[in-house]
Image 1 (cartoon, rainbow, N blue to C red):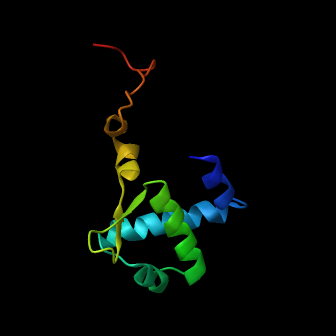
Image 2: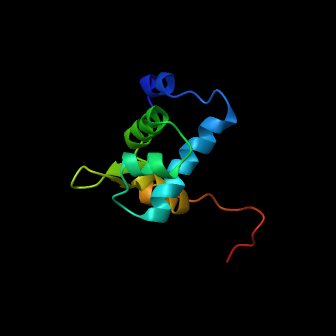
Length: 100
């Protein structure tokens, strides 16, 4: 995250995280191509809030624009949450699990 990104999106309260996760969950649930207009209809958030969150999530690669530029799909950083090797990170050995 760059310094500019940090100044554009502040988590002033836990609801900011809740809103961002709600957007990600909606895209995951409804599949690629979900539009900002559809997100506004699905979520109890203002249009401005949806656009601000989507803009930030796209900038951080948690969402990507679909090829027709109409909607959004989950980005590589969401996938990397489940599989860190996608970003070139190795999992650290878990000291509590016995080795081979």
